[in-house]
Image 1: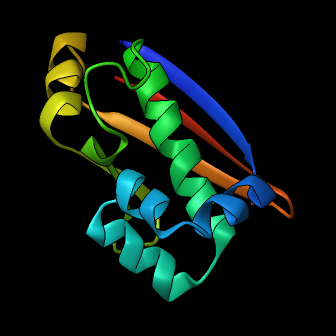
Image 2 (image 1 turned 180 degrees about the vertical axis):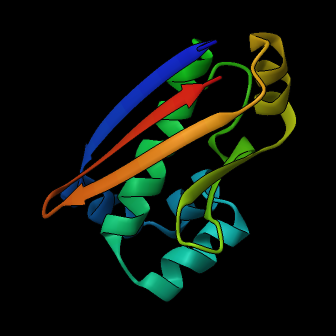
Length: 120
C-alpha cells in the first residue's frame, strides 16, 4: 500500500549559484553526498540529489519540518540507481508513516532535475 508520494523539480542554474557557497553544501549534503558531487563535478548531480531530498520530505507529508536535509541521504546502489538512507528526525518521521520502503526516481534534462518518491 502506498503511504506517501512526493515530487520535486529544480533548475540546475539555481543549484550552480548555491554551490558557490561552501556553507550551502555542508548544510544540506552529507559527507558521502558531497563526495559524489565532487567526483561527479556536476551541479546537475547536486540538483538531482536536492530534488530527491525534497521529494522524500514531501512523501512524508511534512517537508523538512522536524529534521535537517542532511537526515535524508541520497546515494547510488551498485547499479547506479538512486537510493535513500535516513537518519535522525527523518528516520523518526518515516517510522510514523507506517511505510517499509522508499522508492526513488531521479531524472535530468539539460537545465532541470526532477525526482519522484513513493513510500510503500
